[in-house]
Image 1 (cartoon, protein in one colour):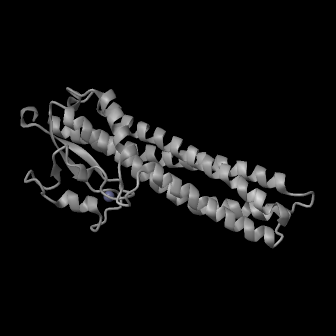
Image 2 (image 1 turned 180 degrees about the vertical axis):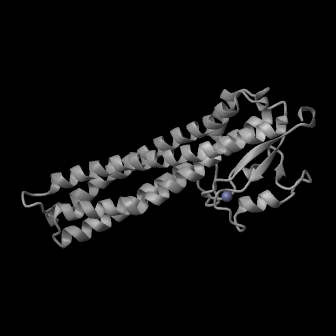
Image 3 (image 1 turned 60 degrees about the vertical axis):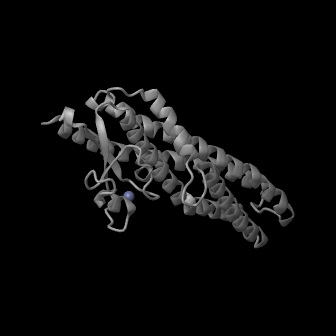
Length: 262
Ligand SMILES: [Zn+2]
C-alpha cells in the first residue's frame, strides 16, 4: 500500500469513527437540556395547590420563573456545544497524530484555533453560535409560556402541564441535534484543514460528500467541481468554502500528499 493509500484509509476510518462520536454528542446535548426540563417540573409542582391545580392568579409569577429556565437552557446548551467543538477537533488531531501527515503540526495551536474559528464563525443567517443558542432558548421559552398560559386558564392539572412542557422540549430536540451535527462536523473539518496547512507533507485536501449523498447538496457539488485546476474535489487547505458546506453536513476531507511522499 502506498503512503497516500494508507493516509486515505486512515482519514476515511477516522471520519466513520467521528460520525459515531457525533451521534453520542447529540445525545449528550439533548440530555443537558433535559436537565432543565426536570427543573421546570419542580417549579410547576411548587406552584400547584393540594388539588394539583395552578391558580390563575399565580400565572404571571410562574411565567416570570421562565427567565431562569431560558437562562439555564442557554448556559447548558452553550457549555455542551463548546465541549463538543473541542472534542471534535481533538478527534481529528489525535487521530492523525502518529500518521505521516503529522510532520510539522503543532496540534495544541490547531485545536485552539479551531475553537476560535467555530465559535466566531458567521453562518448564512448572519449569526454566530451563541446567537443561535439564544434564539433556540428564546423560542423554547415562548412555546412553554404559551402552553402554560392556555393550560392554566383552562384549569388543567399540573400533570397535564408537565406533559405539555415535555412535548415542547421534544419538539425542539431536532434543533439542538442539528446544531451538534453542524458545529461538530465543522470543527472536525476545520481541524483537518488547519492541520493540513501546517503539515510538511500534505499538499491539498479532497472533499467527500456527506452521508445524505444528495446531488443538490453543496458537499456533492464541491466533491465534483475542479475550482482550482487541481483536479475534481481537490482544494487548497485554505479554501474556507469546504469548512462548512451546508447546515447538517457530514461531508469530510482527506489529504493529498505532496509528490515527494508518494
Ligand atoms: Zn453535505
